[in-house]
Amino acid sequence: MINQLNQNIMRKINFLLFIVLAAFGFTIQAQNVHFGVKGGVNFATLSGDVQDVNSKTSFHFGGVAEISISEKFSVQPELLYSSQGAKSEFTETFEGVTVNANQKIKLDYINVPIMAKYYVSDGFSIEAGPQVSFLTSAKLDYDFTYDGSTESGSEDFKDLTKGIDFGLGFGVGYKMGSGLNFGARYNLGLTNINDDPDDPESNIKNNVFQLSIGYFFL
Image (cartoon, rainbow, N blue to C red):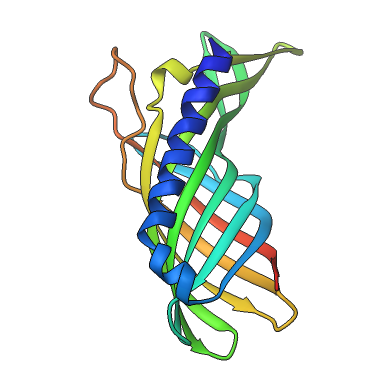
């Protein structure tokens, strides 16, 4: 079952990348195309009908391709693994017993952003574009401490989370002549990722701030 799901996800990703490259095929033949890799840190959280959540620090990594259309303008499709979600810490008292809770919502995605980049000066660019994300796992890790004891565990809630998420990315970047590059991007979730049949009215969205370092193979 898991292997079949992974195969379905990869087929969707490959199809999307094919459409992207086909759409810019004429550009690829006429202009420079540079491939590269990138990775970095995520500061992820959730917005909407969620309470007492804080930013969760995680990571992303993957491959990129920059398709130059003109001296100032380029298009950059990417294929990234991104660990997202949020964390929560709270204290509650139930019938005289105080419970300290620590929870981590772990949402892992394959992200496919397609960014339009405009170079405002030598090496410095601003970027914006859509992103589609494919959910690979959704888990809740928890620790409850009460009466001197701790209860820990993990629950899978992938079946309560939508498999595809859409968003918009906005950012800035700087590329050196050596191919080394740096970027900062904010990904704003547009899709309600809640798919719980017992709570259909809840609206929850991903929000992620990313800091990246990468290298283009010149």
